[in-house]
Image 1 (cartoon, rainbow, N blue to C red):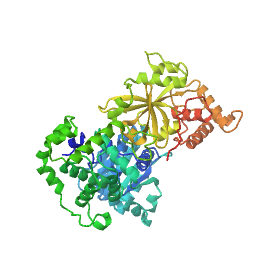
Image 2: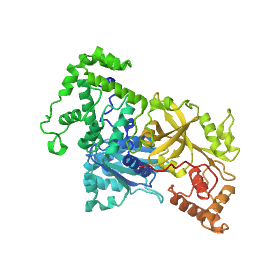
Image 3: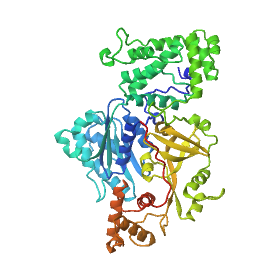
Image 4: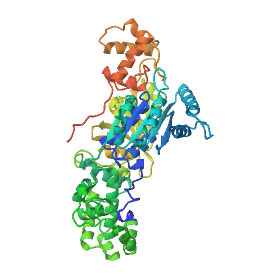
Length: 564
């Protein structure tokens, strides 16, 4: 209803868990990292808890979009089940044939499930079972889930279970009778509320995703009040902002102030004392919904003008006389501010990092790189090489002992580990790919370069543009054939053993380091120290980290000074 009035393509504060609107606060990034770690963590349980409306389900949806390949996922939304109902649901989620008769036993469900887990493991597939609202699980169902994780090999359990629930879930797992299950939790994270700065960044983010191109429709005091009334809980922020924008629309105001926020809170929240609402604020009367419907005809002219791009206060006043002159003047001032200064993600980061939306990509950068090969050519000078304008850049790089590394589901944590400039595939307002060079990365910002223009942007805005596609060069060892190195023989393995020995302070490679067992144990220890999967198999990420550890001359990301 109000979206066109504020220049938005859609209403930004829906409570549906849409991953596009996921605001990656530091807490949400850590929560997502815990889920991604759990997939490769060797099996067992991963626990994600959080207050009602904190964003657990939305994080999970984002996780599902980044799930590694060759991973089978089962998702149970309603866990208030008996043991037999749970096993039947698990079989159905994984597409496992199971008994259909009414008197089926636990064993009749477990046998085909175990067979499925063994067969998928044999062909290199992982299996993840996600259970939402897990605080509703009964103790006997939780015990059955624990028993499901008993099936394992020498290296890992064959079923990874992710439990997502409210804070009561932590209390449930703390019961003495569930101690065995609690000991199998390999990662746990509690998703807390947003800070005041994060609340502002969250609101800006959702408005940007919804297509906001004008000034922020909430003033500073309204922002502070929203954080106070919502307590930093994303779902509560959504409810309050949605109703406040509806109220401003019904009143014909371009800016939401504190008074409008208070009135909106009176309509969507309960308990005066807890919410610190002003005395006399009426509750349970959705007055603005009725006013918005009844007054739709009166403001239809305003809406049409906004859709068509006519935003001058004179035109608004002429077409919709209900808008006060003061509001029109405010709209003009805000429009000028929007044109001169794009909104920042939050006040702390404003001094050093800009907030960048997909629509602003062609404005901030003079030219956009649409061809991946051109992006590789832009990256090449950092590696002191030149690539021809035609041909395969990766094939040309191999001639100087460089390899191309591509990952469709990278994280900033991995990029920080690799510590090298690379190519990010961003998405513009039409969802078309745009290639940018990542040249710097701090705790709060990233520096992007497209052509001759560099721009430092907040990590919040980067999360709206980037879906995990990352590519870079790396220097390969002698004899590298593009495959995982899994034996202690050949030129690549000998080079690797020698470098690992040097890291141990050994001038010569000891004989045991060349045997398969000794070679793999040394490699696994190095991988563990570098935060990599300690599988004793050398691939691109292992070689990149080893090159970094031995001080090989390779370009690095610029680490700008921290700003607080």
